[in-house]
Amino acid sequence: ILGPNFQAIGQLPGFVRGLARVENYLIVGESKNRNFSRLLPNRSPVSLDSKLTIIDTQHNCCRSIPLPSAISEIHSITSAQPL
Image (tube, rainbow, N blue to C red; front, side, top):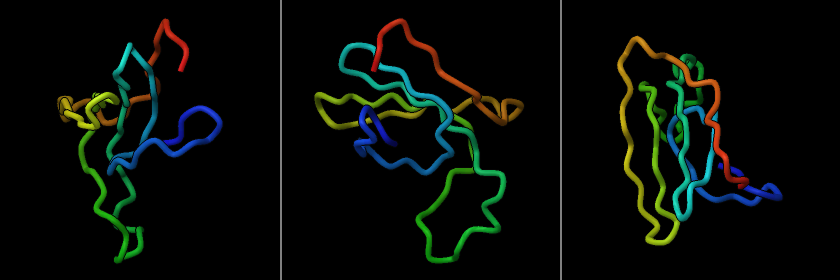
């Protein structure tokens, strides 16, 4: 995940499609990786699920909320607060 000024702020196994900040939390939309079979074999594991991942930046921990399998992609996350 790249934040402001292209600073690396984390790495997740899904295809990141949206990012929002709410106080000390980052909300990340992750779509499943539809082309995982084409990836290099030595690459880090990839996610086959779509989910929302909530990152607590103060305590450096996260929790993922899986979405129903009918939701295959997330296109964006919106927030009233700037990153």
